Amino acid sequence: MSKMTNDFPQALTIAGTDSGGGAGIAADFKTMQERGVFATMVVVAVTAQNTLGVQDALPMPPQLIDEQCASLAADLKIRACKTGMLADPTRVMAVVKNLQKYDFGPVTVDPVMIAKGGAKLLSDDAIATVRDQLLPLASLVTPNLPEAEELTGMKIQTEADMITAGKLLQGMGAKNVLVKGGHFASADEANDFVLLENGHNFWLTAKRIPTHNTHGTGDTISACITAELAKGKSMEKAIRIGKAYVEATIKDGINVGHGHGPLNHWA
Ligand code: PLP
Image (cartoon, rainbow, N blue to C red; front, side, top):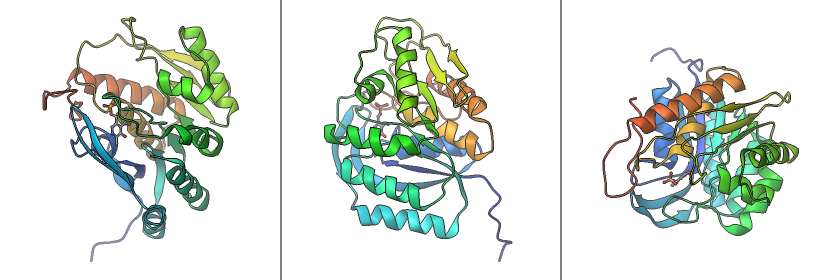
């Protein structure tokens, strides 16, 4: 038998599947693998999905979420984790309870709400649960603009609004905040605002990349940050690497399917 070791960096994604392979746990796994981290998963929901959209979704029984977490905690040494699609208040609470029970390292919360095709990956009545129960456990929260609007209740139309939203999200308990600006309709830039735990804040600027192969961008940046945290990088360094990685994978997006193609994780 080979020597047992728990030294290799291990990370966890607590999220939904994508049968089409481009988003959710599939994107998280490809990203973590590419960043040199051993990936593990807790499946919260299964989706029937392709590049055109989400055709169906089924959340897992909370007991099975508990059991998956218990299995990991009993054996592996998870150094960082992320949450993605959490479906509804029952599943959000199941995840919150497990994050309180087990130490899976710093928690990156990607507050996934609506897929590009319009499908709801989080029910409306779960938004308050994410805000009130999950954000206080978050080392980092990574909303896009619509998600930041839902969580803060404010309209975000300018970069000044993004700063205000970042401060509000920190006030809700998330230690560090990354507000992603890619959803500004007209801008030729995709600038993100970062607010760190110590109050230090800065912008990550990027040119908008003209492509429709953008399926799974949010999953990819949060998974990359999680992987870098699992390797021991600082929060600031991990976020900067995440932004560069998602840019590189979008630039090289892959033409498969008939809708929004996936990113290229071999970039
Ligand atoms: N499906 C799952 C399970 C996801 O977790 C996510 C994103 O977080 C998506 C789909 C969204 O994909 P898209 O980038 O196309 O909006």
